[in-house]
Length: 361
Image 1 (spheres, rainbow, N blue to C red):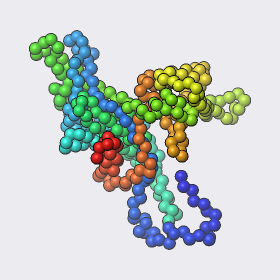
Image 2: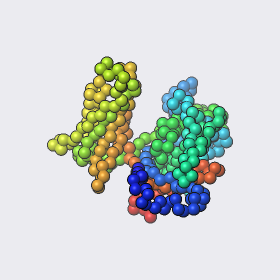
Image 3: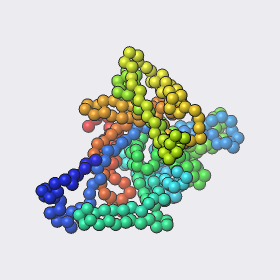
Image 4: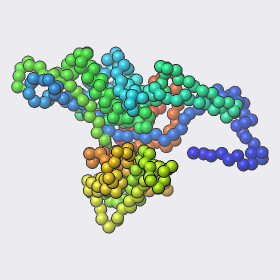
């Protein structure tokens, strides 16, 4: 954050103030921020229907491109929504495009906040404030870009996820499942959800399709954990209104722990994860109470002249999710979009560059 000092204002010329205010007013600004891209592997799996009379699981491995062709063809895709945070937020697939060469699928997910506060704008040149009001049926909207890169294995794809933009990966997984269930029940693409039963000539077995999104492991972070090449692990426990007898008018909001590596002993990833889980259970969570808490684990290491912090998903059951591969783009320039454009082509171009191997042109 850049701070502007008010000291000495009478002795310095404000260059912005002497420029033509109207010309500046009409120039749309770019929003600059750090962009985080997370790497995952996408697949779809056939699942036996609960009331299926034929025994055994289905053998079909759905082809990723066929799934998205069916999704793209479904006409009421925007009406299929999932809700989060006690239905404050709704999420839907707002845009989908399959490249001509069938190598990429671009998706944009919309997150609608129907309880958003009115937005206030402040004009520094005119010292004026204005309000953008939300009416009864209006919501604040954020969009998340996701790029799916098809691979030689037609049943799997690489997924590049624009993080921290309103729609979580869990919501996307749930939304894909809901979309596929809707398509199956509407029977718009029945061939996707049936196969010839194993051992028969023409008996049809029907099934559902579920979404699998697995993290790609960040090898650099994993190597740092195994070798002890990091500065510390920061564990933070955030409480919701925890009061103490000694301080009746104050409540505890955070507890922090710092653990530093011992360079005399190297640990496997599994042992590192198991140890942190046990430490968290014993020393951070402690006795079980009714209070709601959030626990975060961050690995801190030096990268050049800077300290970098990486969130670790220690409490997840899967070891591979401890260190999800991420790519940070510093000072990413996000363009202002016209009302009729649902996606930022600059984001998709950036995702495509990241998806290419380093030795490719």
